[in-house]
Amino acid sequence: EKLKALKQTQPSANSSNPVVAKDDAFSKVFREEKSGRIRGVGTGPTPVTLWGRKNEMLKSENKTLHQRIKVLEEKFAKLENKELEELSADFAGGSPNGN
Image (cartoon, rainbow, N blue to C red):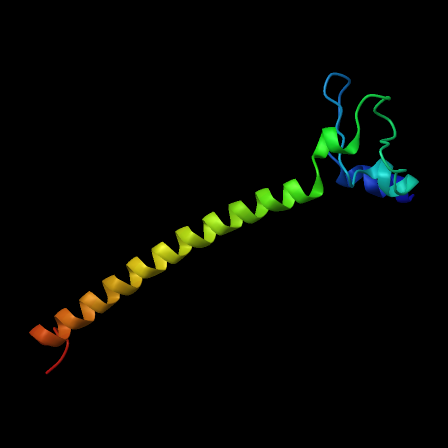
């Protein structure tokens, strides 16, 4: 029953393009792999060759997140400057809605 439920949440695989993931249904049912081994994909692939080193993945993710933060900070600064310009223009020229 547990395997059937997991299969429904997993993407399907075909023989030419097998789906291998760290948290796929197979690994959830049969528990964690022994160090340096991956069940069901033959003797060649290792966790590092398929998914890379954990610290490399974290560095890449950190770089991506820092880039996103920089873009968001730039957008925020532009919006903040635009708002200040509009407020100063309204204050200097009199508010169009005011008395």
